[in-house]
Image (cartoon, rainbow, N blue to C red):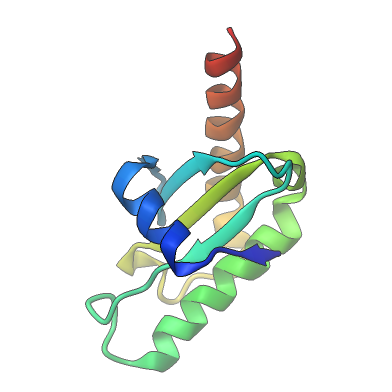
Length: 114
């Protein structure tokens, strides 16, 4: 899983498209690489404890690794911001969120092509 550089993250936060799932806020922008790049943004407002912020990042990364197989062929830069409700969730609880990300990105591809 390739990560985004800071300047790319700031660009997506300013100009990217966004949508929300039950547990995540997703911002994205098309790239010309043919593969996705990810960034996970978690502020101290999410939790004052670094342990909880890091655990949320690990859960999301693992969910993408396990269930995001179809995302591997999409050329998007994706910034994921977890919602507070993700604390205490397990990886398999994010299956619907990952599938929704896949559907939204596929619909975006279809909308831009047609």
